[in-house]
Length: 68
Image (cartoon, rainbow, N blue to C red; front, side, top):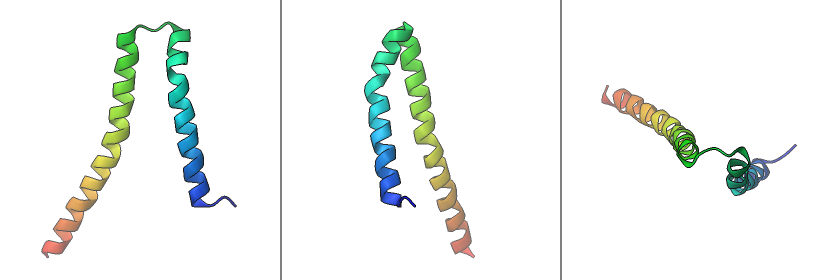
């Protein structure tokens, strides 16, 4: 069984590798810069927005529960 720290470390390494190779993959596809920037911003925003909404929703529910 793989520990939680090992899984986290492997995910970190995989993310670093994917980030390192993304410019190479963009160059190979020949996509224009604006398209590449759009998709980077879109997926980056989703990646940051989803956890923000979840935390915000949980904290709002905790505030409602504490009022009663």
